Structure formats: C-alpha cells, structure tokens
Length: 314
Picture (tube, rainbow, N blue to C red):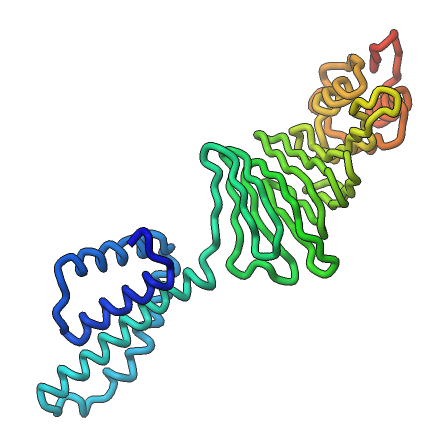
C-alpha cells in the first residue's frame, strides 16, 4: 500500500467496497487493509466534517425509506433494495472522503529537524527552517495567494502583478507581488528581511510598512511597535551597517519605548519611576537622537538634561 500512488489507492478501496456490497468473496487480508484505510481516513477528518457527511448521507437516503409500498415486495427485492441503499451510503461516505482530501483539506508542511523545501502550485518556493510549519489551502492559488506560517521561512515568490502573495504569520502579515524575503518569529519578536523586490508588512496597531531590498521590518518583540532597519553596505568598507530608518509606537509603555531607544541609539535614558508604566504614542521617523528625546520629553511633560550619552528626563 505504501508504494501505491493516490489514484491507485482510491481505485483499490472502491473495488474492495464494491465487492462487499455485492457479497463477493473477500479475503481476510483485504478486509484488514480496508479497515486500516478507513481508520486512517477517519482519524484525519475533523469532527465537524464527519457530522456534515452523516447529515448528507441521511438526507440522500431519506427518499428511499419514505416509500411504504416497498414493504409489500418479495424478499429478493428487499435484499436488492438494501444493497442499493448500502451502495448509496458507501458512495457518499467514500466519495465524501476523497472530495474532502481533493478539494477542501489543507496541505500542511512541517520541517521537523532540518530545512524543508516546498514548491507551491504557482511556482513559488518556500524553505521552511527547522520547527516551522506552512499551511496551504487546497484552493491555492486563487486571485490572492494566501498561506499561513508558524515559525521561520524564506520565500521566493513567483512574480504576478495581478495576484498578490500574502503570508499570514503570528499577529502580522506580509504582502508581495514577487520577491525574496525571510520571516522570523521568535517568541514576541517578529522580523521580515527583504532581499529582492518589495513587500508591505501589516501589523496590528501600526501603519502599513513598505520595505525595499536590504531592509528589515521588526517589532523588537513589543506589541504595536514597528521599525525599519536598513542594511545597506558602506561604499568604503563594503560592510552592512544597520541604520534605523523609521520607528513608531502606538500606546506603548514608556519603559519599553526607552529600552528600544537606548538599544538603537546607544544611549542611556533616566526618567522618574512613576512614569515607567505610562503609555505613549509617537513616531520618531526622520529625527535625530536629540530631537527624538526632546519629542519624548514633550509628550511626557518633562524637561531634558543631557550629560554625554545620557539623557535625564525630569
């Protein structure tokens, strides 16, 4: 069974069930294989689908049993009738299984230990990193190509100006037309690294962010926070030096804002302890370090005193 192709398995199962209905002799081994297949399929079906399948089968059989004149026929006819009923049940049950697997059940790819390469129906290629999972609907690709990602992966998306490609991740999504990018999810920390093309990143509570090649979108592990970091190579040293291009916060605690500013600007910020939990909304895009700290102090209603690389808010 393991070496058979899907269509061969389908034909084999139908043939076995056909012989059961017509009461042809079936071997013990064949019965075991049939039971194994049935058990395996039922385990993979969700309870909701099984309930819906039963309702469809009963609804389809109802006309047969509503006709009272059948009770007056001879025993051979009854036997023939119940064979037909059994055939109808099997047709709907087995047909429902194959319809579910062919048209509705999602495809799930999991990289259990090493990287796993997944080739999608539109020609796009996804490399799942260890421990990651990709879910693809049977209807893929549609007008909008949508997949769900848990974990980390590198995408090489087939270009299509008419059909966007959307990756739904944990709390954010990345929309592209054709490009190469990487999504990384470590706990609350989310990042999108763009290598080729252009992408739009949507994250709850923040504006949509558009990335260019050699740029990274990140939330620094903080909800309602978004930043774009550039990794353009320096012409003199040819090294990729990070540069913060944009940074915005939407209703974020001061202690978290200060932590991000200190880390990215290599500074220290001292503020009154009672302000630590105060939530602020600010966009620090385009400003210098001094300008951004002044803006932060203004929002809090505090004054700034600078001592070398330390900013004191009081």
